[in-house]
Amino acid sequence: MSAPAQIIVEDVRHHYRPAVGREVLALENVSLQVREREFLALLGPSGCGKSTLLYLIGGFLPIETGKVLVDGRPVAGPGPDRGIVFQNFALFPWKTVRKNVLYGLERQAMRREEREARAQAFIDLVGLTGFEESYPSQLSGGMKQRTAIARTLAFDPHMLLMDEPFGALDAQTRSLMQGELLAIWEKTRKTVIFVTHDVHEAVYLAGRVAVMSARPGRIKTIVDTRFDKADPEVRRTKAFVDKVDEVWNLVRDEAVKALEKRP
Amino acid sequence: MMTYPLFKLLIRHAPLLILAMAWEAASRLHLVSPLALPPLTDVARAWFELVQSGELLSNGLSSLYRAGAGLALAIMAGGALGIFMASSRPVNAMLGPLVELFYPMPKSALIPVTVLWLGFGDGSKILLIFLGCMLPVTIGAYNGARGSDRHLIWSARSMGARRLRMVWDVVVPSALPELLNGVRTALALSFILLVSSELIVARQGFGYLIGYLGANGSYEAMFAVVLTVAFTGFLADRVYQAVVARVLRWRE
Image (cartoon, rainbow over all chains, first blue to last red; front, side, top):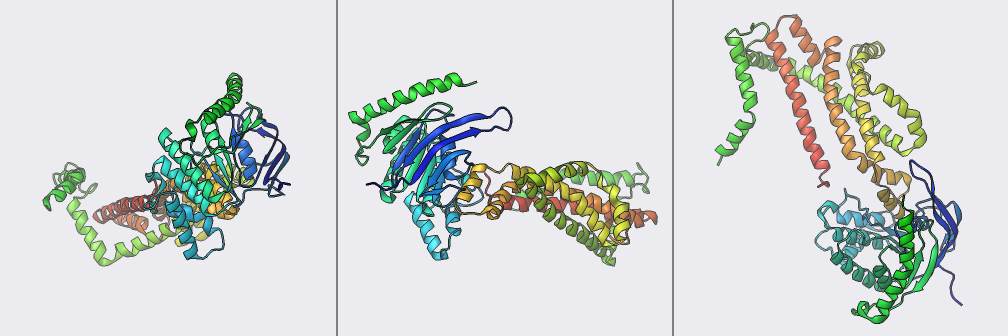
């Protein structure tokens, strides 16, 4: 007998309402279950609503139809149980690295020395020792995203919602950050939902990949992608390459559809 | 080593020096009537006399008090109003049209009104400067707050910040660059409103002094006060910009 899923999405529909123009059905009858301590990737072509689904779980957007339950309770807004990391880093530009990482800790009842020590520990963890007093504008893209990850890990959320976190990074930095994220996940074992449109990234990072269809978004299939991630050569094994191919074939049809639907 | 920065300072202020020399020459050589434009050296002498008699200081302090008080009130009320409007749709719907209506109105038209309400003293000037300087700050704060990145707002909320906390921690700093731009406009406006209101009805202040000296034919002294006002305004703007650069040092 297994425990009930930590995150349950049931029959969720959602409309995207632009400031001008007609509303668009972004998600249609999406159902998904994410288990505790699982690393799940949400994969799909751009505009398929994968970020929208993540924002609904995060409580940033109102739920129109369907249900979203986190730890058995319906989502009614954002909360520190669900940490979020955005593609554009979303660091407070007026705060230094240290103050950014401290922000979530200051919202909790915690002694000052404890806060400072904890912030420092997470700055060290992501390799930003020595940059505590730098402002985000003084950092490279990779360093900004490390800061954002440290900030989110520091206040110890039960789960991490990651919205294409490495999408704005160059190829080398992206590859390094993927390795580091896996190492951090091995250490902390938080539930992770990782939104991406990069097949290779999804297969490498996640234990399961939920492939979404082109707009309106639906979960098309869920593919098991468990490998021995500790093996540095895993990405060159035949099993891994075949898995990437298999997922890529599933996504390709949707990417083509998404292109055709583009106005 | 000392000569080089001194030389640079001289070069930077060369246009001012040339202007001063041209002024002096034009008056001394009777190219213009010394009554219309007294020689700069006479103006300088009159300035020292005004300083010695204490007139310049007492009138200046009373002007600075009025401008400072009006501006401080305008920044607080205008900033709060702009951020409030940006954070609440109903508030914006209610107050937005009023702001748009009053923004282009020349505030000097309110001089008689404020005098009618609060009399000849400090109150009417402070009210006028407050009314005239509030809207540029409001509009700056509103535009800045409207431009807040929703990902920053969401980040703060997901880290446990409640709505009011989030507004203070995210919306206010996001609004700051544009708000401070509005304050710079307000600063310039405050000097204009101050001097014009004091010229019309006052018993104290820079504007009063200019009007009084002009009416008595003390043109050297009148020019001395005009130059003092110009320099004070310039200095205030410079100091303000230095403060803003420090406050916004987190930007590139």
